[in-house]
Length: 478
Image (cartoon, rainbow, N blue to C red; front, side, top):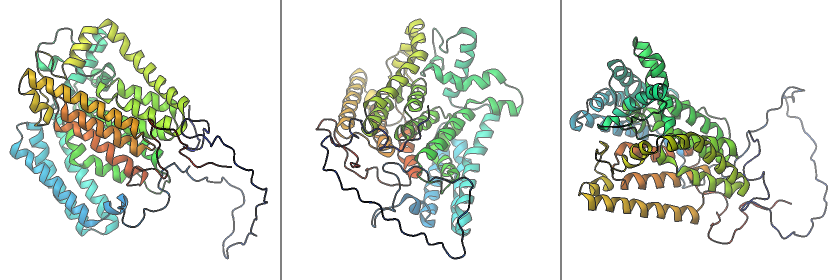
């Protein structure tokens, strides 16, 4: 169901968005004063034809330009010096992988990406301003994403999660379950929920043929396609006006080391990032059923994104009331249960061991995911350190819950920030975390701001606290 109501003004009976219960004195009926129409010289008003209505303004949208002293994302992104500095930082980051990494795929990516970032920086400096950003983004996208991805696909090189997803699709067709019954090695474990196997269906159907077939069936292509589509749709939902196309910002974000390395090597977390951004945008735009379905899809890919559900539900409750929030939550839970519950009943042991215990490091075979993050360092000290990591993870989750209740989000930017903070804490304190996971909270912080063209996540009116007395969040209309 598609709603065309303007957010914040469509349901006056909401929990925090209702009109004032105490009616004020009636205002005297004053006929409006209509000034006489003065036609502009040399221009005529068109007779007939479709009338283009402005894009509905969102609550907390762009509106007037930011006040003096507050940074503007669009203005900062268009500065030549910052563009060149960003390309230098990206080139330095990529150049470090051939020197310090022991993974061949990462070394190949760094060898190809570092010169591309340097070329992009030079193009941003020497070309005319209108063409500099596009040329730099094209150079970065070509050298840091397209060329390494094609080379790795044609050579059959990828991270282990790509092979796991493609194998799960074959198992789904042959055995009806994406999980191996008795895993013996690390690559036998499938730490994802059943819907993740959908990204391996093209490879299961096409197989290994010529170069085009291998490229079209590779799961990384479909991870990237889902990521791009979700970000494009969320841009259109969050953008108050259609004054700018999302292709250039999306190309810059995709070509950045934040996304490019994950896309080229594995890319399994990219659909999760896109779906979370899309869910928050749909919630702000009052698309309750669509938001619930998107949350259900994300929740059936990987259980680590389930914190997005209460964040989106509270955003809907804060903007539109209890009924839309309950509708979205029940839709998400019902659709996700229809996918997960049959496997939980038929393959309960496999689901518990591979999806829950294996990522937490509770199985005999440890996950290879690792980085010098606090949770991983603590888990390296044995059972006591592992328990301390889980305790800190639980405390961090409780702290984020209190934060969510005390400062409920009132915009997609605020909801994405809150979700990004919770996920960052979880990834930092998890017993088996790695730096690649931090791409998800980083994109959650960056992309909604680019789309909404607003730096701050604060709404135009003070937000109410769920633990205090409820107050109307929107001005009373008479």
